[in-house]
Length: 592
Image (cartoon, rainbow, N blue to C red):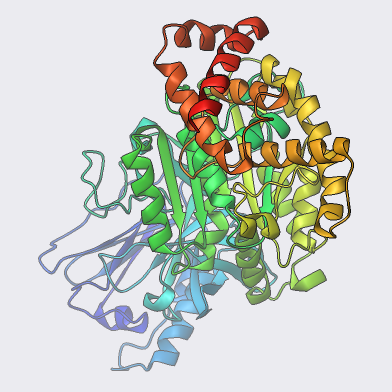
């Protein structure tokens, strides 16, 4: 091992002042840096192991010393030669001196360009794709990291995970010798965090450092990980109840499924996802809500709803808002998925909502174009399909227990599901819940289209009682849609068609549900039985909602409600239901 000591003039050739105030950085083998104070007498360098990078730097009051491996000292001396008589250097010469230094070092680079959240790095010849690097900026209190996304012949393209205004050309960049990872564990439950796992809700936590990051001793997972193998999976066999009548009956979802929520802006897509999270209260399901490109006020409102409903304790909110860098929006869903995989591997059931992947694709397109990658259809890069497929393939129902259910959200433009991103995600997922703007404006909310919505695997896990009635419900709604247009034209209809239209209108009205008011699956079974067996035939359409409310209040006041709802989870007791509903309907019709 050989070391060289440089005097003050040589230090100035690398742009460092001789007072060692805050501009001398200690490069360690893990890629971190420390500023050295004025009163440092001597900082002994640690002995380097065979696995460490081949140099380390430490500073004393007057000198800066480099440790270099045997055999590299001649090349190193040539790179750092300097005329001590020269008293000053301009910024260009300092930059060139630093550039000559990093040419010989595999684990340190220098910033040659930075703009729009993208940094071009010279050096880092041994860096890996997807690795984390640390920027050694001039502010010792700021730690900036970047993600390597481009490996070119002469430079490395790095996306900055933070504010790039602190980075200037000439700053050193160090490898962290690890791929991108995020913190995981129970301490994240009930918190609002950014995609790097740093809490942004302002709450005090004993695991937090002074820089508002979690203790490194807490567990972490790689942001990108391999999806579970086919052998380790099992079929979807357990229902994920959303609490929404139209979803649980027509497009059921199972644990481990990938169900797309798709529709135009302002049609209630997020409301369906939030209702599903609210319905998991007491169901032993961990929920993760990933907000991508949303407004801060929207994220705060969702957090308040979950807190008011006492559902934040089993939920993690990962927020990459519209005001944050595109790089953070790009990694947000992968970070949320990694946090969910931790609980899945512990044998727990996890629900992960990605709101929404349209903005995620736009952020990735922005990064790709800034990295000078060739654009394809609609300006998206060629691997935009892989962008979402590798994310959604990580949803699984494991054979050994544990599952991860994905609810991605896609925003369409004027109902166009044939656009690039919607068709990609539709082909990846196991079904879609399609929301129509026309239904939403009519007041039919959730505005789920029964004809276009489908669940390919969820029916295998659907509640048996609901499944018995779902076939009749789909058939009657389909028949109603066929003749609905004729009623608008003023045609004279026969009695059978009139009954069909009247039944369809009441079924449609029955499926309407207020936001943040999920219903138990047994209550849904009672309402559907009443509608499909003629108990609503003599009830006007405008009183269907009132009938529903009064029926639920009546049942909860009787002694048969608890045993009835317990047995309805396994079998349909039609005799008891018919007796109760006939008596209630008769009384309701008399006093309406």
